[in-house]
Length: 137
Figure 1 (cartoon, rainbow, N blue to C red):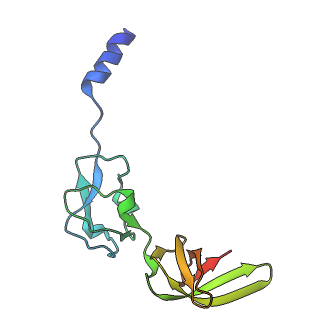
Figure 2 (cartoon, helix red, strand yellow):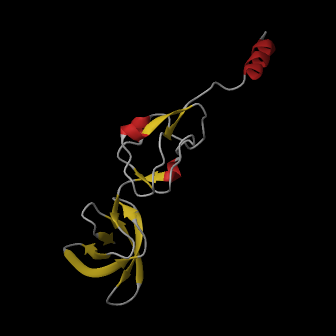
Figure 3 (cartoon, one colour):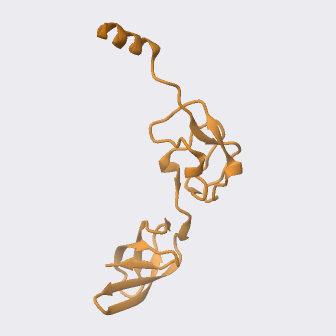
């Protein structure tokens, strides 16, 4: 009996699932809204099943209708733009040092970003904050 149930389970195949896709072309850098999203009949491993998980995220690449949105395609809204001059902040104990740096990439809040210290020309990696600064510890 157990073999019969296992055989039936294999014959029916996996259950159909839905993924989230966009309804119109979305350019990289655009923040997604609920009006931009719909369900696709295909499922992908690293896709989204609930459109609410995508609302407020920024497209990191161009998104096209009919293709499920994958986790690598979106991220937090950008707070540090590439080539922007950003405050580079170092905190240790009660000491805080703030310098100017040039962002070598773009990042959302809490994401790592490489920055060149404009005084020493050294490159460091820090975490982007909501106000556009980069904290290096």
